[in-house]
Image (cartoon, rainbow, N blue to C red; front, side):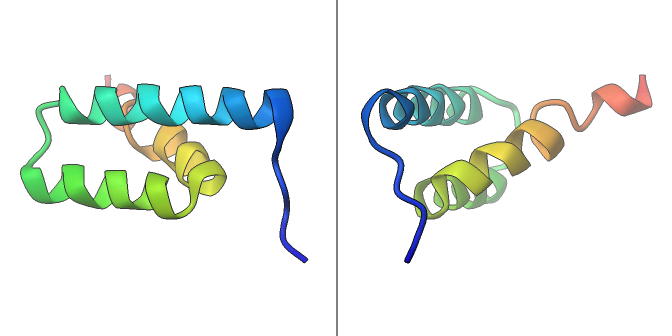
Amino acid sequence: MGIEITGILGLLLLIVDIYAIVKIMGSGASTGAKVLWILLILVLPLVGIIIWILAGPGGNRARA
């Protein structure tokens, strides 16, 4: 009874997941934070990406 993402949407989600993981690995965050973000994206791909977009890379922009 879960949400099933296949075809083009599944491919797009995979591409965005890989992009996010590469950006996380290259960030200046601590190793622990990187591991937590990557685990979140791998365990909950769609929800993890949404949370990462909202709180991850743009988290410091609100203070500028």
